Length: 399
Image 1 (tube, rainbow, N blue to C red):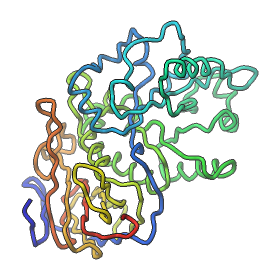
Image 2 (cartoon, rainbow, N blue to C red; image 1 turned 30 degrees about the vertical axis):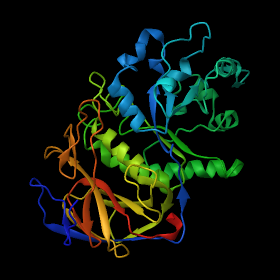
Image 3 (cartoon, rainbow, N blue to C red; image 1 turned 30 degrees about the horizontal axis):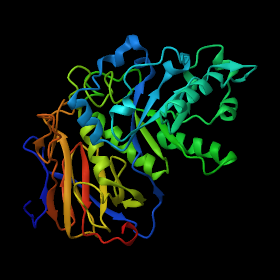
């Protein structure tokens, strides 16, 4: 990688490079404001994939492509659930088929339980206990369970008979409505603080749009703005898990249903899991809400082998103009991982990393090297996003 000792210009031939905003970013390095772990970003399957007749929607667990793409995201939670899960009953005599947990090395199962099984106004745990006993007897490891999904979508009479307080008594649900994410996280936090302030909060099912996603949007580059920003907000506010709806199936999935080709959000998710470490750092900028910056200690145990003390920032530039950003603290080497649409359109089906298109070829994840920059200053193209690692930051709490 060549070291550029001038401003690193990321603008492509298709982007106007006139700078219309200058932003200064300062990362607070005295303490971590939150922590996450290797399983912070997970994925989901719909419960409707479970019946033998559904055949997992055609997902081929034996495909080298499916296995390679899945393993690259490990360690990872796979949550099987969703609204259909609240209409399902576990039948130990009919259980069978391929187990995704056995196929996807490094994936751990989160299973959604039917909260609409009621008795005398309370949750009836009988069927859930049958599932747990069946799994335990066969040494199936299910580290987490989720009770219910989207209670606001329950049909009558359940919408009238199962109140929020009752659901809380049953088990605190992991679902958070995504409109006004910060507000809803604060609401959920206030609820859990009344009973147990240490209760972990998750986004148990989240994507860009509901109902399977929007064709030509949820499966395109443009969906990454919301996805990356959501990960930043969730980590900053102390959530412990964000499960992407879904890994496979419908328009908001990470891989295509027929060819298993990765969508743009797959590559974004993979970079996040490779680069973003466990300690979340506070960030101060002089920017507007259309230029969003988050920071963590950089992940050290990955193929890039960043040394202790490294910092990673991830940036979402929603502005429709190039933005000049400076990091006054970090004026040494910068590794830039910048994602842009492969074509000059936010609805591009393909994505480039530092100008090179990302493609899965010959059952191999492509090399995803950074572009080296220097001096703590970058010019970031309009309506793009990506990551910047500071390998020589030397931050004490990141060592």
